[in-house]
Amino acid sequence: MKIAFLLISFCFSASLFAQNTNESYGAWSEPAGGMRARLIVAPGRKFSGIDYAKTYLEFQNVENSLTSKQILPFELNCELRTTGGKPAQRGGGPISSAVVPLPALVLPHDSTLRINITGDGCTAHQSGGTFIYLQNGFKDQMWAIEKDDTSDYFLQGTFHIDKPKDFSTDGKRNWFGTLQLPKVKIPRE
Image 1 (cartoon, rainbow, N blue to C red):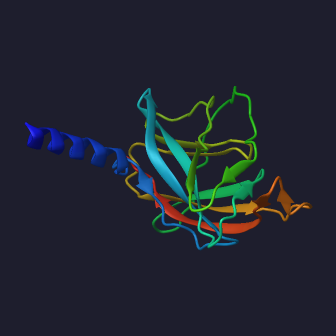
Image 2: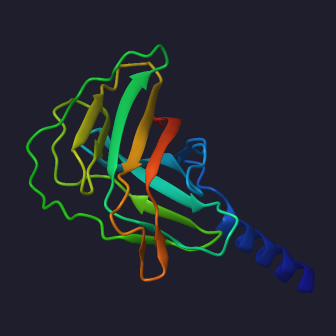
């Protein structure tokens, strides 16, 4: 009985720490200013044969000190391309949602923070396939991949924060700089 309990406990705890196999993880960017980041894309909600992909931006504090990083409002410019480098078709329809800018984010020492950068309230004008919509306080970026398109697609981006006037606020270090986010493959069924 004890062995069965231990085996079930082990399997349950291992599942808590496993990466979601439906998600596609990009490589970490090169660190800048003690921080690195990456893109993560996962299948999202499905509606009328369209997969509205979920996209996340994950930060990691890799500085060898006990300092927290404060991430102020930022720019994120992404592009979606095929394996051969061909840009993806821009897509999307009317938007009916409020854009709520992200507040300043705090990234403690030796920690990771994942935020959802998926936009909501947009209509895809396509007959199926995958739709990617990034919002969250920066330029709307939308792409449509038709269901009969067999190409592999990759999302990559540039994350940027200008140097703030006040380098430190409330004892936290305001991060600034540019991170080149390596490409991540778009998961498709």
